[in-house]
Image (tube, rainbow, N blue to C red; front, side, top):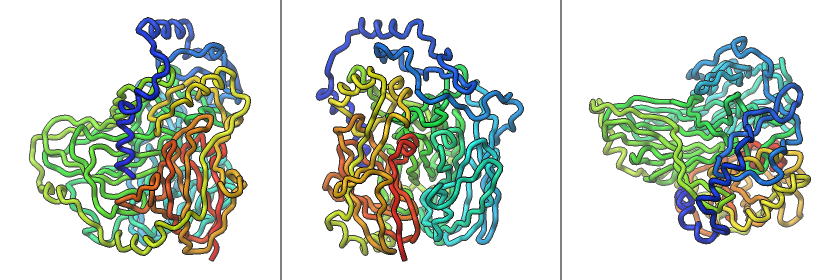
Amino acid sequence: MLKRLLRAVQAGSLLFGTFFIIGLSTSARAQDMDMHAGHNMDAPVMRGDSVLWRMPPMDMSMPMLPGMDTEVPITAAYLPGAGLDPMSVPEAKPFEILDVDDGDTIHLQAGLVRRQIGAQTLVMMGYNGQYPGPLLRVSRGANINVHFVNAIDQPTTVHWHGLRLDDYRFDGIPGISQAPVESGESFLYKLNFPDEGLYWYHPHMREDVQQDLGLYGNMLVNPISADFYAPVNREQTLVLDDILIDANGIIPYGKSAPTHALMGRFGNVMLTNGVTDFSMDVKRGEVVRFFLTNVANSRTFNVVFGGNPIKVVASDISRYEEEMSVSSVVIAPAERYIVDVLFDEPGEVTITNTVQAINHFRGEFYPSVQALATVRVDDTPADVSHAAAFEELRTNEEVIADIDSFRPYFDKAPDKELELTVRVNNLPLPVMRMMEIDTLYVPPIEWNDAMPMMNWVSTGEQVEWLLREKDTGRESMDINWTFQKDDVVKVRIFNSPRSFHPMNHPIHFHGQRFLVTHIDGVENPNMAWKDTAIVPVGSTVDFLVHMSNPGKWMAHCHIAEHLHAGMMLSFEVTD
């Protein structure tokens, strides 16, 4: 699946000829600029609970639709900590690594923090006053307790993303596994770690706000075997994010419902490990193992390591059957990848998000390269060379043996079939008219916010994202599946290209693991156990879900605004 998504990065040049509807000349581009002239995007245009709406930053080459210059989201504007002097809020610190042993209890608090993003001093959120939250490093098989305190002004929970918990009551889903943790209250989570790999934690209430403002952190589950992975010189976590800001600070959120409900809230500033200028130093010839996590609300990244060779080792819950050499790593919201990179030449290497972005207004693709981090490679040779181990693409027999027991189910008929689509009402008329034209063509993956004004004014009160069951017609939370422990369930998901706004969706199953067995009828030749996988527009993806954990769980899209606009269902696994 990873290599199929890599090919989608090149789709711009391949599909351009089928899409270009109306050619716009250079003079038309100048007219676009004139349409924006005099429209102060930093100026407040509406007052809501003392927080002012401001139009988000826009690409000046994208024309302002007639009638949109006075439109704002129908919900009130909201910013946590509005009115506070940022200097009265504790300054956030870089994340700490907590080595947690079996039986330990740790403290975790969600609170307001002061952050410096570029030249901006901002009030944001953090776990334990850190960005990201503390990295919890544990061994496979450990059991720990987390005493959580909510010190923000919204109810919240903590979801332990990807963990196959023994007890669903600690999964962090309000109304399903626990009650919301109100401001000033606490909750004791009991966690177990049955699988090696990289996981993360985040809120599961208004994560379009809370996660976007910094409430996220990693969990790294170390293997028991010393040779589980190939040897490397050093390891580094990279938590990838973006944030939407202008000259006045963070663009406000919707108070009663998310804004940016069509495409999700894309940021205009890239963050790696919470900063805009993350860097690290290595020696020539070193192999670095990177633990990648995408915590962005909506953005799918295509990560390039400056042309240096990349070896994909593992994803969400397991290693791959066979390690792979790739040129870049496509990572959707909530996914994780473990990759090894060889830095064999001295100099400065920029890690980038390199994509073919799209301008919906013009029907154009254009290259977009955004810096994520810098690696400074010193000319001093590595103390120990692991180049030979890096060149070897290992076959993981344990993973193959585990998956082999599930291969008899690969070609069975689907047990459940879902369609991904959307329903809208009461959107501004210019948005409706533009979308009728826009859906003549859609890319399989939206790499950027190609319609920022229309996306911003759409709210979760006007846009309803749907999981629709093929056999019954039931939608989203009207779907409530029941399975027995150790059932192997094939869920076939079709992402309809004919909806009001077709868009890729990263689908996450709580508490279980799955294999992506087929994409558009073609068997996946190299698998890893996953908990989140992207479904591109127009594609049909088969998820083979191992229902290993009893309890009440959820499956949903992990674009934060889509989740809060209804794209979720519930299921129960009984003993």
